[in-house]
Amino acid sequence: MAIGALLALGLYLTVVRDLSSFRVEAVALSGASSGYDARLLTELEAAARGMTTLHVDEDRLREVARRYPAVITLAAETDFPHGLSVRVVERPPVGLVEGAGGRPVPVAADGSLLEGQPVDRPLPALPGSASSGRRARRVATASAARLTAAAPRPLAAWLERVRQGPAGWTVELREGPELRFGSLADLSAKWSAATAVLRSRAARGARYIDLRLPDRPAAGGFPARPAAESGGAESVPSGAESTSVADTQLEVETRGEP
Image (tube, rainbow, N blue to C red; front, side, top):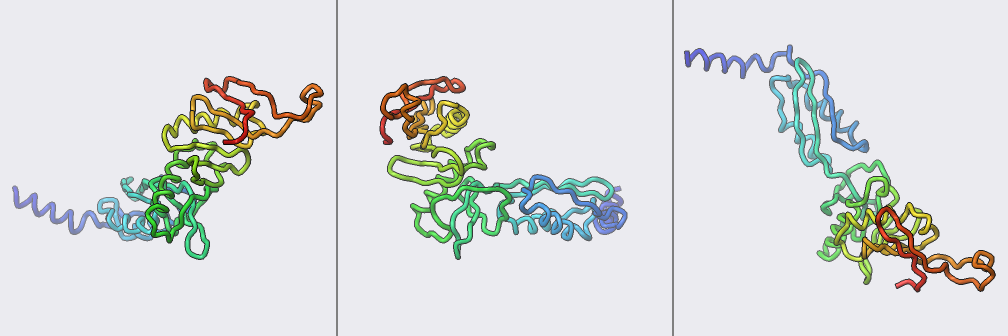
């Protein structure tokens, strides 16, 4: 009986699992960004030629996926008799640094460079460069990537640039005030406060939003009000006021910028 079982297993391994009756004819891909999914699918289909749903060479599929820096790993699942579903796990880009010749190089949330990775949406410029060998610059890039990766999805597309200065981290928006984060502590709370303040009418016209105290964000840098709007008095900055914004207390600053 044992010999018969071994013979049956040998027959399966050498003949049955590679029969054309189980040849892979359709490959479905999920988990990949639109910037490269069509190209990756084409290459996976080419790699799957000659495979069967009883004999899938995942190492060969992973070799294809490794050409795409954003892909961390993949898993393949068969759909008998001729289907193959491939799901990739990726680390999407969250910003850009300058590469050779000034070309932008995508950066992942952990600060890794995604050389050659297609980008299908606007991404903010981060400090540092792809060719920088200085640890301080690499750390700055990774820190900035951590900051942008924490941004809420609706706001992420509006981020234009991240910079670090004496007062900490600042994010410039494509349209709107700059966001002053200070440190990278409490990023979730700071981004929530930024979203709430940007929706507030009281913050319209502000040049910056100070998020260093996320439970008390401050909007400032307002233009001076015309005399007609201030009851005939001389032109002065808008008076101090306070308004509730999604359970976050917003201070409208009249003092000079810090």
